[in-house]
Image 1 (cartoon, one colour):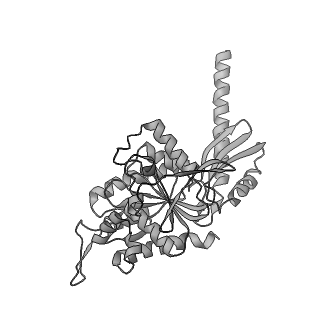
Image 2 (cartoon, one colour):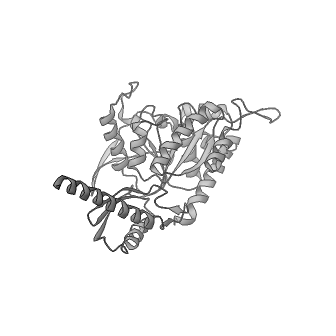
Image 3 (cartoon, one colour):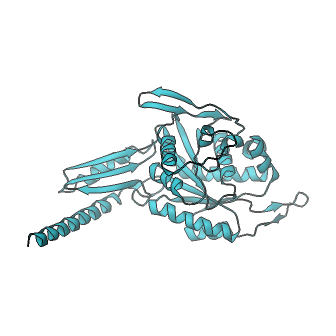
Length: 351
């Protein structure tokens, strides 16, 4: 009889815990993040929610301008009669207002090139920008910004030792490539990889930034999931090319972000068309419609269609991004359009 009773008691406790958790979730869904105009649960800002006895535990992933959300949560959950106390672990990157991920379903679509040029275009518009090169399998951002091999400085702060990012062309940069030996493969195994990634998210002294762009590895592996789960990313920009094979890979990527609740802020279609130097006509070398199709599926904006331009490639090779090196080019104009859309999304509520 005693075994049956204890089993029954456990089932009752489980049912009560689940019921209480749903009650908490419904209250949290009433808290709207003003910039993205969605609730904090749907935006993936609330994670690791647990009910233990009469206590609520959760993690809150926010930017430096969203501290008021912690107070709103405490206030909202104070109405629960059974809750003795709510414990909130705030997860943020000090000094960083907006953290965005730049992602792609596969390699070779120009994700890192796009990330660098978005950062450059944001800088030209007066924003304070940082780039975190978290592409552990192919960290190319230092080269794309014209940075050779450089030593990373470690400084002592009140919260412990921190990496000091390098500043190049007015952009603060930290890259896993700066830790590696030249021309050696980055063959890090899972636990080491996890430690390096979490260090890069938690132990960099960025100072005050308007935007931190995280260049994710392509695909949907452990490294990508660790970065998404451990950082206060408030949205992702997906880079694709027009052809259907690239689109299929991006769909898998989208599923990964939805699991955590990170919203897709927009689609960028790279290598969209070739402009004829004589007549100005556009030729879709790699097909057309992929970016528009994805944007319609996701109900997310198509932020820009970047043309094929030899300078995009050569500018990346020599460390002079096209957004800086040739500001009057059609590609540069697209990058300006992209960052204008991003600034429009975030500036109104980030002051």
